[in-house]
Image 1 (cartoon, rainbow, N blue to C red):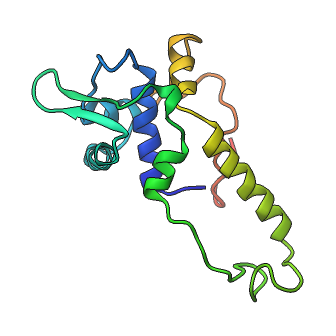
Image 2: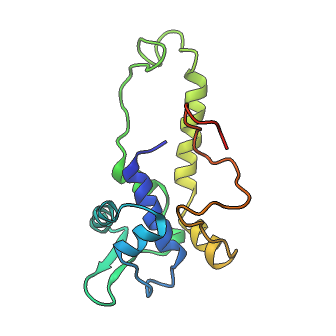
Length: 166
């Protein structure tokens, strides 16, 4: 669905949304990285890009750190996605050969169009408010990396071809 930079940006922004209190609470790049189980250097780099794009505000020094630049309900998943992802404007069909949209569609055409539409809708319709609400109102807490939940469920990620699904 998206690359590692976008995934890291959404993880960082979602953590900042979880602690949103009009921007008074600030988290360092190291805190966000550790709380999300991500590499510190990558999170720092991503937060710098998010700051340049006015998605977060940062302040250096003691008591500094990062906060969302706007309230979570005003920020859509589409924003970090657009910052780090490039739209594929190629007309070449990746599966059936030839030019997509000309002649007979490949066997996957309709399914791919449906999936792309669903992803676009998810990115446009979902705000970071969902993360703030989950933690502050619903009492949900993300499970720290490395902790095995007692009641594991299937994840959204596809199973690795050499591993059996849990």
